[in-house]
Length: 238
Image 1 (cartoon, rainbow, N blue to C red):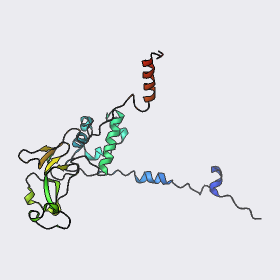
Image 2 (image 1 turned 180 degrees about the horizontal axis):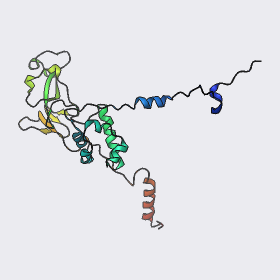
Image 3 (image 1 turned 120 degrees about the vertical axis):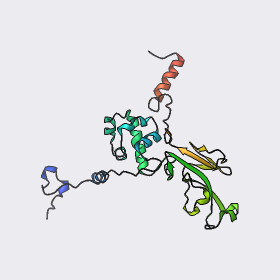
Image 4 (image 1 turned 180 degrees about the vertical axis):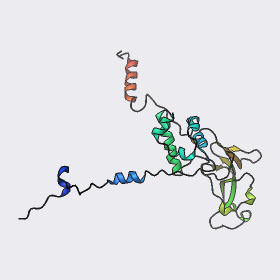
């Protein structure tokens, strides 16, 4: 009978020949591939770290002097942010969370605006032909063949000067009624019946509000409620 030799991977470590080198795990290679930090480009509405920190709120704009450049904003680790004095830890986690959202192109309102001047963007309602009626004059179409969009245009451009095929609806804003723009932080312009509005960078425009803990939160809820019930029964032990 011919005895089969033991496979190298079934032998103890000290018996494995030195020429057999351990192969890196998939997780190790995956982590190495993610080591390269990607820096997303700023947008017209978010041109610098100061604006980014102002938009996401939670008073993170007070740390803007510690993060002077766009590359710095998207390359600092949590440990480095802590060294700069960004406290508490939940603020660092929140900043890193928003940073990853921005990397993926997930903006708050105004993040997709392309026409911004001094932190102010103008939006207005425009009428464009529906699918199947492209290229036709909107004035000659029936209302059923026209759709309305909220678009971001330069401050000195009117709807008469735009090409309907080139306009793109902005995210986060809607039309109520015939032509009234509605949405967070919208400031309608006088004399336009709500069809033209402006948005400007403000503190906390993109802020995700923290939830309010009820009875001490999930981890302490049972204990807090039992103590309260005991106190109401007059049997709470000190």
